[in-house]
Length: 108
Image 1 (cartoon, rainbow, N blue to C red):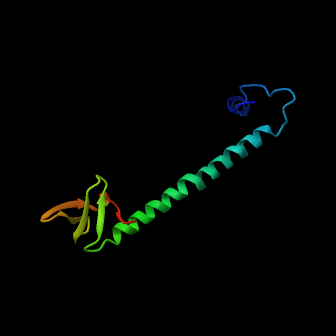
Image 2 (cartoon, rainbow, N blue to C red):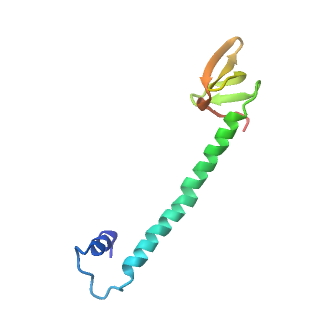
Image 3 (tube, rainbow, N blue to C red):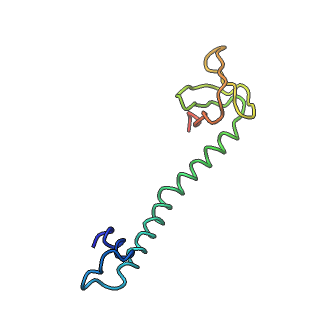
């Protein structure tokens, strides 16, 4: 019995298959719920944890810290503002970069 048949049976569009257990629809719904629970613990929860760590890293930036941007530019934090940072790339070359573009510490 496939998923489509079960859903059609639940709507009353298809008669139940002879010899099928009466609780098969309930067990199928339970299986779908378990699938979502497993998906939450293996996909959604770790992604939220990673995003929280990245936000903490961005909020904890300090002057002189080495960083990498989303575009792959390596540099050192020169000034920190509310929404952006001034990053020294090479010698006297400085770039103003949005904090959301800072991805990670290159040594990590």
